[in-house]
Length: 134
Image 1 (cartoon, one colour):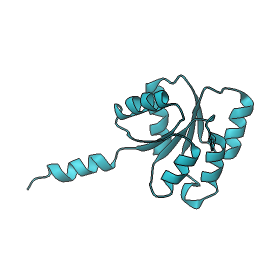
Image 2 (tube, helix red, strand yellow):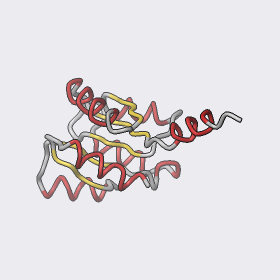
Image 3 (cartoon, helix red, strand yellow):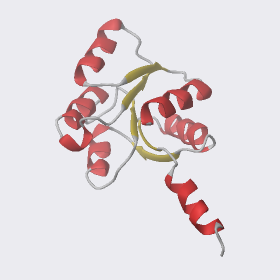
Image 4 (cartoon, one colour):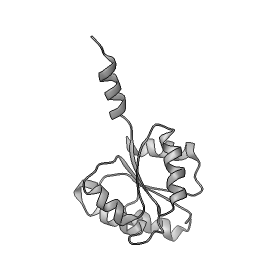
C-alpha cells in the first residue's frame, strides 16, 4: 500500500494559511517570500476592502494587516471582521510602521490579536504567526 499520498495531503493541510493585507506591492512581495519560505500558505489583498471581499468566500488561519491603506484601513478591516461570527475569534495581527501607544490601543480595542512594527524580522514574524494560529 502506498502511504505517501495521504501523508502528502496531511502535510499540505497542516500549513498555516495567512492573508496579508498591505497596499505596498513591495511589502506584499517581502511578506510572500518570507512566509512562503517558512512553510506558510500565503494569500494577499491590497487593502481592507479587497480583504473583506476575498474573505467572504475563502478561509484563512490568520490575517496580517497594515493600518494605513486606501478604501478601508486596517482599523476598519479589524472592526468589520470582528462584527461577524465567522471572524470573531480569528487571529488578526497588525504589521505597520506605526508605533504610537494610541494607535496600538485603538487596534487592540478594535479586536487586534497583536502588533508588529515594520521593518519586520522574518523569524519573529513567523514565530508570532505560528503562536496565534494554533
